Image 1 (cartoon, helix red, strand yellow):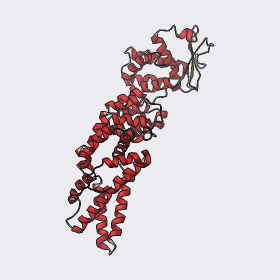
Image 2 (tube, helix red, strand yellow; image 1 turned 45 degrees about the vertical axis):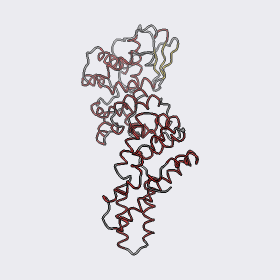
Image 3 (cartoon, one colour; image 1 turned 135 degrees about the vertical axis):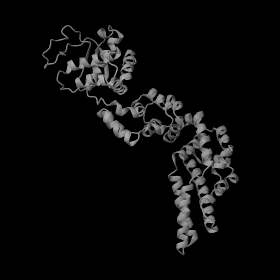
Image 4 (cartoon, one colour; image 1 turned 90 degrees about the horizontal axis):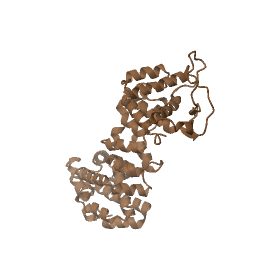
Length: 420
């Protein structure tokens, strides 16, 4: 309805200048209603039964009928088409406002018309502040919290959660990081006071990450081709993970320069720190303490330690690691040898995953005790080998042994410092 009547958007923007959240609620409500263009309508008494004032609609034509407690709105096309763009827009707002008034509100129709006048006074500049606006709509019994100040800190989050593809793309383009869309616990708690009852229920069930996951997993009809180029690197990483099984989406992501930059940043980050340095350190300390305290078979303790590290690092691989795996899988599946070779020829690749590189870092996390160093080297080498073996097994299971073997043949195991 908004698309066919662009003046509605113009008016909503003027309302948004005073109260963006109210304008947002109204726009979404307009889109939820079922607008039926039809012929001549029956005349309906729109005067309030509890009114003692002079009727104001005695000679009015019946242009529209809103079926109360439903989403149906009927418009007489022969009359509606004769209205000015401004009158059409305010008629649409009038019918939409029924959703924000209780069915048993006293002087309901009078208050509805009064609220429409209030919105008109915003467009003419007579009402310029939220305070004045709130006074009018609260006087008219509109079901609206009138506490947008509490919602302001999470405005982008609200626009993203409830927005269409275009709005989401715009929000994502402005966000420095996808995590910045998610409110803090205190912001979220305060914002609930300013949200409509329906919106409050919705936002408590969804986060920005959940929504990215839903968008990219193919559970919605969103136009991802429009959204993907607008996503920042963090969002693309989440989307690459969420779109497993959606070949078209993953191919699109893998081709984006922004995601290529993310891969480069990931390799650089990995090359500058051990993949699981903190966890490895704790494991070594734990095993070393056990070996010192008990006369137990060293190999058995080492094996137990290795199994714990291997399971931890693959089954609980962080989102970045998963996105890297999905990227490699996408390149192999699409036979994109150029990007695959470019990645493997990147010096940062072997610097990031080389056992020799990781081994040089052990001095920062273990003591000078030879036994402890030897144990640390054994653990990290077994971890590295197991990581790549599991990586290849998963590739084989998901996209075929031939593709997995292609990747394996391209790996320089000498540079990795292990034998797969």
